[in-house]
Image 1 (cartoon, rainbow, N blue to C red):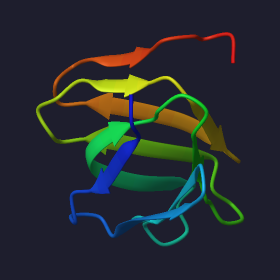
Image 2: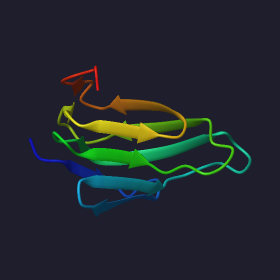
Image 3: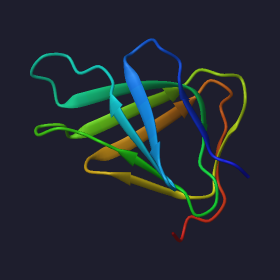
Image 4: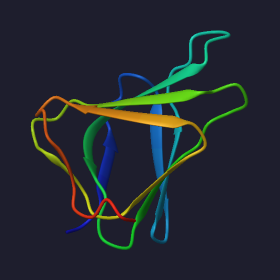
Length: 100
């Protein structure tokens, strides 16, 4: 499965690829808040790829939503310097191997 991570352009989320690492930055953070919000059109992480969520100082929670109608399949790695929560409009997020 190939990696497809796209912003849906509603919350300022930016996705940049460097080899097998997809850096996710930007997003929306209310002033002084500990939550950082991201919004994706698609969120699929392929085998041996990594989705790396960039957060600043004081961010305790990264909250992401997937607004596209497809299931999100995560077969690679997720990295975040804060608690990470993902929600999908299609109501399905599949992680193939939770041991990684």
